[in-house]
Amino acid sequence: MPQTTAALAGSITEIEYSVNASGTTGAWTDISGYAASVSISGGEQVTGSTMTMDGDAAIVTGSNKTEPFTVEFSIVYTDTDAQPFDALWDRFKGATKTVAVRWTYAGSGSGKQQYATTDSAKTNPVLVPIVACSPPNAEAGSGDPLMFTFSVICPDILKSTTA
Image (cartoon, rainbow, N blue to C red; front, side):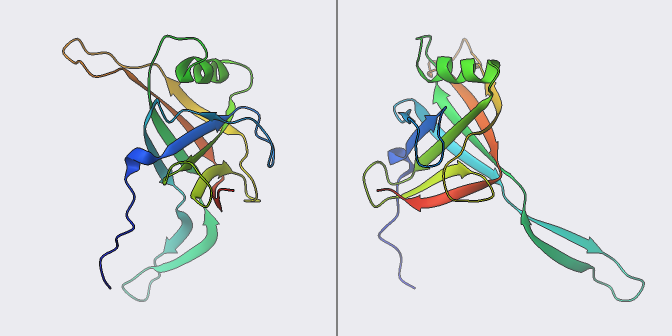
């Protein structure tokens, strides 16, 4: 198979969050100008295994069920009200610790593959629990911008095409 010429650079990823996503409605806030990374973990198929008295290998079964996904974002920290840290921190520390997140590796525009937090129905982006929202660590010997992280846990990730 020949080498691809369609590779994407992570630096053009668009990341948005919503505190009121409901089905196909809700307002989305673009934080691409603050976001530095998105990391996805989890989603493994639940499996089981056991050994028997006969044979030298385990019996392994798959459940056709998957573990939840954890999605973590690294974002530039600012002290300015209503910017990403302030908005997400307030949401995390408030009574409703949920947010919906979506990201598009190929940037904004129509016809792009988009990923979003979703539920087991896998039909629309949905609000999911914020697992953590941590203030930044600071180091005296560094000139790097301060970064904070927040992460969510979701039953599944929806893959769709932007309109």
